[in-house]
Amino acid sequence: MKPVLRLLFGFTATFAGLLVALELVTMALRPSLPSAPVVPPAHEVAAVESLRADPVGRSEPPVLYRPVDYTAGAAAPWWPRGESPLLRELVQEGVLPPVAERTGSEPLVLAGVDGLGRFGGTWVRVANEPDDFRVIEWRLAVSTLVRWSPHGYPIVPHVAQGWSVSDDQREWTFTLRRGMRWSDGHPFTADDILYWWEDEVLALGGTLPPTMTAGGQPGRVEKIDAHTVKFVFDAPNVFFLERLASELEFATPRHYLAPYHPITGDETMINAQMSARQIRGRRTLYAALKDYLNPEHPRLWPWVYKNYKSQPPQVFVRNPYYWVVDEAGNQLPYLDRILIKLMPTKLVANAAAAGELTMQERFIRFDNYTFIMNQRRAGGYEVYHWTPSGRSVWAINPNLNRHFDPADPVERQKAQLLNEPSFRQALSLAIDRATIIRAEYSGVGTPSQIEPGSASFFHHPHLAGSFTAYDPTEAERLLDELGLDQRDADGYRTFPDGRKMTWYIHYADYIGAGPVHFIVEDWRKVGLRLVPRERSRSLFRIERVARDYDFGVWSGEDEFQPLPDARTFVPVHEDSLWAPGYALWYLQGGLRDASGALDNGGVAPPPDHPLRRALGLYDRALLTPDREQQRELFNQVLD
Image (cartoon, rainbow, N blue to C red; front, top):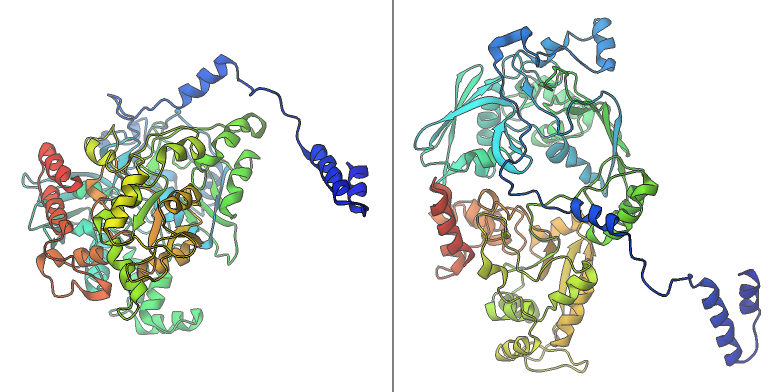
């Protein structure tokens, strides 16, 4: 190699000679490839295919929750008696009370997927930006009132020991676990749930959580006793459990936060904290104290933040008061701590393949699949194949509520076209999905619109195949009919008034470029100029709130069971990419003509808009307990 490089760098002869030197370099750098692809042995192919077998929908889905008889007390096999050696030493030193006192007499009992585990170890994983450390709050350590099972249903007790519901599904009564404690050892009671509802949600204002609304009206929270709380609604709250299983906020450590409440808190303590943290506003202080990176805030999590660090890695250690045990009475979690490093998204697969990570699904993409599978023996890791509830890894969202300056004719015409169904249909028909699947996804998948999926109770075949056939001729015809039949000097279509037309597609670095360059080329073929723009996740969020984008790309969100969170199909979520203004209008009571529906950027769909009817149908589906009626109503939404 070195002689060839010296020959090239010292070459001053003819152009033909330079070509010879370049060819020598090319030959030297070109890898030695076999004449035919390497075909793995049949048994290896079979082993990999078995990993891909889809277990969702089997007759007996896994359930980790174990119902037990709490009256059995210390004689029961699950009675808390085992603990991490790290905590046992602290008990012996008198720093901590015995494990049964820390978990309480009614701990949650879980069975491990692989049986009983061993104490110790660190879970090493990565985030791609500082705000992504929040994954500890909603994915790794979340403690909800009730919880999904591994395949979704059944929903099982979690923080709550159990519940009952009235026949009309308007009253839900939950029994809490006796002896359960926050991570600082303070008792967890119904007062913490009442404080969250009355002193935070109602007193401090803001949009009501969807969990606490039914039929467009807010619910109520009533304390029965220290371990019993009732949620009451004026209309049936059919999906209350599903939403509770996904809701992070339902309780707050009253003993810690009440002294700093912006309205009713202790003046002296508030001023002292504001001075110490150099924070001016009371509400700003309160938000800072609630932040997930405040180590002083008590949690119900299995791992808690011990010491604040301004720079990664961030470390979360076991909660000595975690209220969960395995079937043998060992206090969970087994792992001592979680360590989260910071790393660019594009490097995560390399770190995983090098064996640097303990477990990671986040930021591992399909285009990493072959690399990850090929390196698994060398890296000493296993690859698991999971079926996601989100039905797409890369979905294009045309922004129906694009912000525009009425005085700007380009922005105005963009907003008009994005709201033309035939324009969106043309864009879809112009995409060669089959080629993308072959080239980008190794032939895995079928052309489809984003929809609940064939294994879902809400599967909608007509939606799945709607405008997915590659038909650039029909796409051009639709674009011509819209008056986009003029071309600029580069051959791209112009607006009807002759102005240059350029579209922008925004995607977060979290999602990645995916097939964006295929889309750019496909739309170029029908005369549309498309410019991709990769954004940091924070900037992507800001642009979503400002509605300052043409097309936004994100993955699917829970389409498999769409009713609790139907953001892909109806504008009902604050994170809606395709109709953010309509979503705010809906969340602020737009369907019921609430006075504040247009606040904060809410946009009312025109009275004859199909989304008005879709939102009404969705609300009706949420009020009926009959599964067949739910499907019938939601099928109309999907239509």
